[in-house]
Image 1 (cartoon, one colour):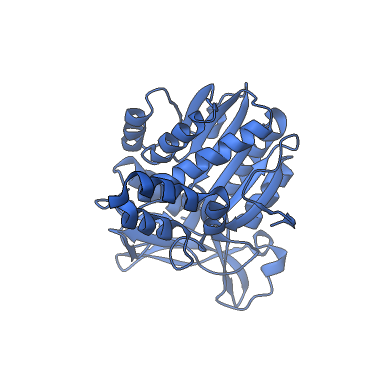
Image 2 (cartoon, helix red, strand yellow):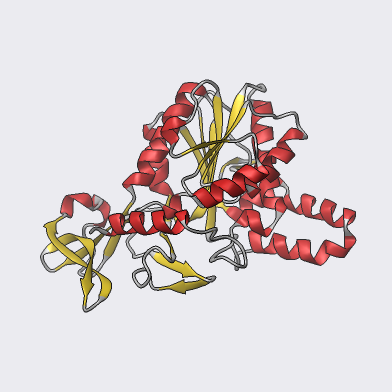
Length: 336
């Protein structure tokens, strides 16, 4: 099967059979590190909603984990009067749906974005969502570009070049690379992004994407697996490890523009959080609970500093042409 089919099947089983988050799981996401992360998202939404004229809106989250981010964001939003008409969570994992329902009993679950309501402006959050979507990989051989497939070799699964020419599937800007080069594309991610952009262009609203990745086009093999908070072989335990790939923010932006929306960013996660006021929030929390000051500073550093999540993770906004530019993506003197 192709790498994309392998990744889709493996992750479908993985997420359906466990809660992968936290110290007892395989990885920890930003909302689980600190309440400040979700609160900054909530402040971002509230600010945008206020500047847009306080329209009716729905809160939508793609891949909402345990519901931690949504819970923290909605609490922060409520302080500014930003109360959504509905809370909609796109989630396929039965275990994570149960955790989300416990935190957000009023939320409505959807298996994919096609079932989302289209009556009011959506404000969409996608934190570490696109990195888990399947990617296609292409490798340059002596005979040209071929799609990478997964085969069984002496009892083990390994990737290898297929036999069907795939030069046209590789972005033109990358076809000149030499033998052995790997190039990735993510048509599933682009399709979801464009569908969201169509909704935004039609109904108004905005979308916040936070993930680890790069601005392409760029060559390289970024498929990785995590098990027990350590990197693992992506092909050794299918369905038992978390498979992800770095997100091409340029490709997402291109898809969003094609859907009629506008794009702001990306900027680093650290810069985005600083612009939203995470340092002021940390000081306020520390003043209210002085015994937690060191703990809160450590949480802030994990989210913001370049040697932690601050530079690897990026934030990007997609918004309706009729809505204002979202906060955190522009310097006072001009675009970021």
